[in-house]
Image (cartoon, rainbow, N blue to C red):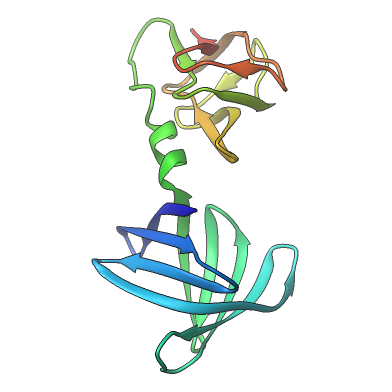
Amino acid sequence: MIHKYSIEMSGSEREITVEKLDGNRVRVVHAGRTRVYDAVRIGGSGRASSWSLLPEGGGTTALVDVDGAAPDLNVTVDNVTVPLKLESARAKVAGRAAPAQKVGPSSVQSPMPGKVVKVLVAAGDEVKAGQGVVVVEAMKMENELKAPKDGKVKSVSAKEGQPVEAGQTLVTLE
């Protein structure tokens, strides 16, 4: 399966594609360049993990330490730690699905068919623009849907475990 990610690092945004191949092999496409690695988890637990990346065809093995939980990660390679934001391309699109509105009621709608995994707000809650309100799972990926504006939650029509269709209103803000 191919996974597309958006990485924000040092103030710039980059796209990366990772495809799981056979065994421990992964194909990584970044900036038009394709590389295949033998990727083996060599340690860690919880929010921290260590990986050995051996390039196919030879080259130096990279030891990579990852600390944190997506989207906010700290990645260390060769004793250099870089903070980055890692977000699936699908989650990034879902976060932009509802355009921001300045006045009047607005709704948060499911951008795709799926299942409600978690409801993060209740009627009467105050929310800020960009705050997560509902998590929808689609194609085995969780997508946090965000409030398009500051406001008060007028109603929540989503329930955990509920199937949803694309365009279905899940939360209404006033």
